[in-house]
Image 1 (cartoon, rainbow, N blue to C red):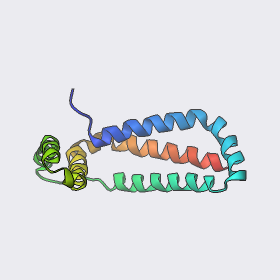
Image 2: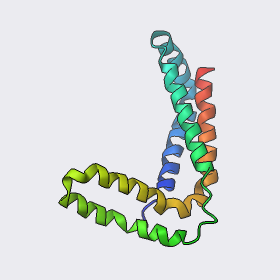
Image 3: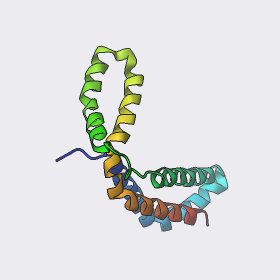
Length: 138
């Protein structure tokens, strides 16, 4: 089985978070309100999470890779980097942060051809999470 792309992993994590949040809103909401009476910054947590969801939504919505020629080949190129980068870390341990940065970019590029397959699901999950987060403060 092939490794999951970054976008498939994101979908899995968003699904897990959304399912948990949606299933537990009735329990979490009164607890959040009680905590907010003691620690008002808990409302900032909800706002920051909502802001993060907005940023994710914008980033995903802006991904239109349908007109990029050679995207499949570039994805294959970046897909070959993990083994090379792991080997480089062993030889260049002081460059771990730099190598990790390269790896992060490569992971995004490698997953771009699959973004169309999960884009609608990602956007729907983000919207559902935002709705549940808003209900915690209502």
